[in-house]
Image 1: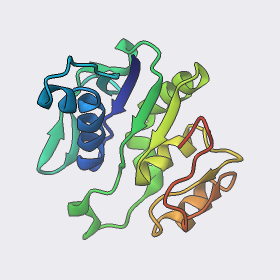
Image 2: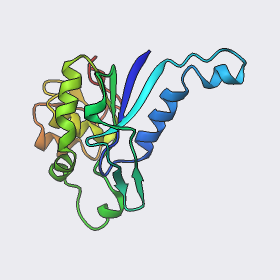
Image 3: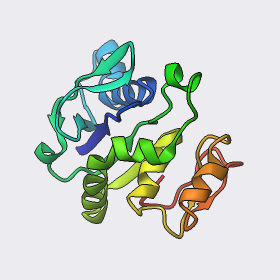
Image 4: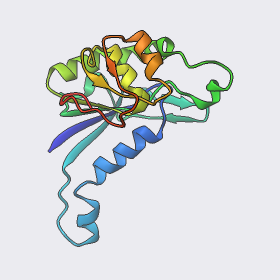
Amino acid sequence: MQKIVILFVNGGLASTSILPLEIFKSAGTLWNALNGVPLDGHFEVVTASADGAPVKVSQHLSLTPESACAEVDTPDMVFVAAGGLEFDAMVSQPYDPVETVARNAALLPWLKRWHGAGATVVTACSGALLAAAAGLLDGKRATAHWGLGRLYAEHYPNVDWREEYLVTDCGDVV
Protein backbone atom coordinates (compact mmCIF):
# COMPACT_ATOMS: atom_id res chain seq x y z
CA MET A 1 0.00 0.00 0.00
CA GLN A 2 1.43 3.36 -1.01
CA LYS A 3 1.49 6.25 1.46
CA ILE A 4 0.34 9.57 0.04
CA VAL A 5 0.65 12.85 1.90
CA ILE A 6 -1.68 15.67 0.90
CA LEU A 7 -0.02 18.90 2.02
CA PHE A 8 -2.37 21.65 3.13
CA VAL A 9 -0.92 24.97 1.96
CA ASN A 10 -1.54 28.41 3.45
CA GLY A 11 -3.57 30.42 0.99
CA GLY A 12 -4.26 27.29 -1.01
CA LEU A 13 -7.25 26.33 -3.07
CA ALA A 14 -9.24 23.90 -0.95
CA SER A 15 -10.40 21.96 -4.01
CA THR A 16 -6.80 21.07 -4.92
CA SER A 17 -6.41 19.51 -1.46
CA ILE A 18 -9.82 17.90 -1.09
CA LEU A 19 -10.16 16.41 -4.59
CA PRO A 20 -6.93 14.34 -4.49
CA LEU A 21 -7.76 13.34 -0.90
CA GLU A 22 -11.13 11.97 -1.96
CA ILE A 23 -9.81 10.32 -5.12
CA PHE A 24 -6.93 8.51 -3.43
CA LYS A 25 -9.02 7.53 -0.39
CA SER A 26 -11.73 6.00 -2.57
CA ALA A 27 -9.42 4.16 -5.00
CA GLY A 28 -10.04 0.46 -4.59
CA THR A 29 -12.85 0.98 -2.10
CA LEU A 30 -15.85 2.74 -3.63
CA TRP A 31 -16.35 0.41 -6.60
CA ASN A 32 -15.65 -2.60 -4.40
CA ALA A 33 -18.17 -1.50 -1.77
CA LEU A 34 -20.86 -0.81 -4.37
CA ASN A 35 -20.32 -4.21 -6.00
CA GLY A 36 -20.01 -6.41 -2.91
CA VAL A 37 -16.32 -7.07 -3.49
CA PRO A 38 -13.92 -7.04 -0.52
CA LEU A 39 -12.37 -3.62 0.03
CA ASP A 40 -8.89 -3.19 -1.36
CA GLY A 41 -7.66 0.33 -0.59
CA HIS A 42 -4.54 1.00 -2.61
CA PHE A 43 -3.38 4.06 -0.72
CA GLU A 44 -2.82 5.18 2.82
CA VAL A 45 -3.69 8.87 2.63
CA VAL A 46 -2.51 11.33 5.25
CA THR A 47 -3.15 15.06 5.39
CA ALA A 48 -0.48 17.29 6.87
CA SER A 49 0.49 20.88 7.41
CA ALA A 50 3.89 22.13 8.46
CA ASP A 51 3.01 22.19 12.16
CA GLY A 52 -0.22 20.18 12.24
CA ALA A 53 -2.30 23.30 12.81
CA PRO A 54 -5.24 24.28 10.61
CA VAL A 55 -4.30 26.04 7.40
CA LYS A 56 -6.24 29.09 6.28
CA VAL A 57 -7.11 28.73 2.61
CA SER A 58 -9.33 31.82 2.41
CA GLN A 59 -11.04 34.25 4.70
CA HIS A 60 -13.98 31.85 4.74
CA LEU A 61 -12.32 28.45 5.10
CA SER A 62 -9.61 26.60 6.99
CA LEU A 63 -8.51 22.99 6.57
CA THR A 64 -7.48 20.90 9.57
CA PRO A 65 -4.85 18.25 8.79
CA GLU A 66 -4.44 14.92 10.54
CA SER A 67 -0.82 15.56 11.41
CA ALA A 68 2.27 17.71 11.28
CA CYS A 69 4.93 17.00 8.67
CA ALA A 70 7.29 15.80 11.41
CA GLU A 71 4.81 13.04 12.30
CA VAL A 72 4.75 11.59 8.78
CA ASP A 73 7.07 8.72 7.95
CA THR A 74 8.59 8.75 4.48
CA PRO A 75 5.73 8.87 1.97
CA ASP A 76 5.69 7.38 -1.50
CA MET A 77 4.03 10.49 -2.92
CA VAL A 78 3.52 14.05 -1.72
CA PHE A 79 0.73 16.08 -3.28
CA VAL A 80 1.23 19.87 -3.03
CA ALA A 81 -1.98 21.83 -3.40
CA ALA A 82 -2.23 25.12 -5.25
CA GLY A 83 -1.34 27.95 -2.91
CA GLY A 84 -1.08 31.65 -2.48
CA LEU A 85 -3.89 32.72 -4.75
CA GLU A 86 -6.50 33.83 -2.23
CA PHE A 87 -9.25 35.17 -4.43
CA ASP A 88 -10.51 37.67 -1.86
CA ALA A 89 -7.05 39.26 -1.60
CA MET A 90 -6.35 39.25 -5.34
CA VAL A 91 -8.90 41.98 -5.99
CA SER A 92 -7.08 44.36 -3.65
CA GLN A 93 -3.40 43.41 -4.02
CA PRO A 94 -1.22 41.71 -6.62
CA TYR A 95 -0.13 38.10 -6.27
CA ASP A 96 3.32 37.94 -4.71
CA PRO A 97 5.20 34.64 -5.13
CA VAL A 98 7.89 35.73 -2.64
CA GLU A 99 5.25 36.27 0.04
CA THR A 100 3.56 32.98 -0.85
CA VAL A 101 6.81 31.07 -0.40
CA ALA A 102 7.48 32.92 2.87
CA ARG A 103 4.05 31.94 4.24
CA ASN A 104 4.76 28.31 3.40
CA ALA A 105 8.51 28.20 4.00
CA ALA A 106 8.17 25.60 6.76
CA LEU A 107 7.04 23.07 4.11
CA LEU A 108 10.19 23.40 1.99
CA PRO A 109 12.54 21.30 4.16
CA TRP A 110 9.93 18.54 4.25
CA LEU A 111 9.54 18.56 0.48
CA LYS A 112 13.33 18.30 0.11
CA ARG A 113 13.61 15.58 2.73
CA TRP A 114 10.79 13.42 1.40
CA HIS A 115 11.87 13.88 -2.21
CA GLY A 116 15.44 13.00 -1.28
CA ALA A 117 14.14 9.83 0.38
CA GLY A 118 12.45 8.79 -2.87
CA ALA A 119 8.96 10.29 -2.71
CA THR A 120 7.41 11.51 -5.94
CA VAL A 121 6.27 15.11 -5.57
CA VAL A 122 3.10 16.05 -7.44
CA THR A 123 1.94 19.66 -7.59
CA ALA A 124 -1.29 21.30 -8.66
CA CYS A 125 -1.20 24.64 -10.46
CA SER A 126 0.58 27.21 -8.31
CA GLY A 127 1.80 24.44 -5.99
CA ALA A 128 4.67 24.20 -8.48
CA LEU A 129 5.99 27.39 -6.89
CA LEU A 130 6.79 25.53 -3.67
CA ALA A 131 8.50 22.70 -5.55
CA ALA A 132 10.59 25.34 -7.35
CA ALA A 133 11.40 27.11 -4.08
CA ALA A 134 12.53 23.78 -2.61
CA GLY A 135 14.91 23.35 -5.58
CA LEU A 136 13.09 20.25 -6.84
CA LEU A 137 12.49 21.72 -10.30
CA ASP A 138 15.97 23.06 -11.07
CA GLY A 139 16.93 21.95 -14.58
CA LYS A 140 13.52 20.37 -15.13
CA ARG A 141 10.48 21.18 -17.20
CA ALA A 142 7.52 22.45 -15.18
CA THR A 143 4.18 24.06 -15.70
CA ALA A 144 1.78 26.16 -13.72
CA HIS A 145 -1.23 28.28 -14.54
CA TRP A 146 -0.50 30.08 -17.84
CA GLY A 147 -0.87 33.43 -16.08
CA LEU A 148 1.97 32.55 -13.70
CA GLY A 149 4.66 31.07 -15.94
CA ARG A 150 6.51 34.29 -16.71
CA LEU A 151 6.29 35.51 -13.12
CA TYR A 152 7.66 32.22 -11.82
CA ALA A 153 10.45 32.30 -14.42
CA GLU A 154 11.57 35.66 -13.04
CA HIS A 155 11.99 34.16 -9.57
CA TYR A 156 13.12 30.65 -10.57
CA PRO A 157 15.12 30.96 -13.80
CA ASN A 158 16.70 27.50 -13.39
CA VAL A 159 13.33 25.91 -14.11
CA ASP A 160 12.23 25.33 -17.71
CA TRP A 161 8.73 26.81 -17.31
CA ARG A 162 6.31 25.63 -20.02
CA GLU A 163 2.97 27.34 -19.56
CA GLU A 164 1.66 25.73 -22.76
CA TYR A 165 1.68 22.29 -21.08
CA LEU A 166 -1.07 21.04 -18.82
CA VAL A 167 1.16 18.41 -17.19
CA THR A 168 4.89 17.88 -17.04
CA ASP A 169 6.27 14.58 -15.78
CA CYS A 170 9.91 14.47 -14.78
CA GLY A 171 9.59 11.09 -13.12
CA ASP A 172 10.19 12.18 -9.55
CA VAL A 173 8.31 15.50 -9.84
CA VAL A 174 5.00 15.86 -11.68
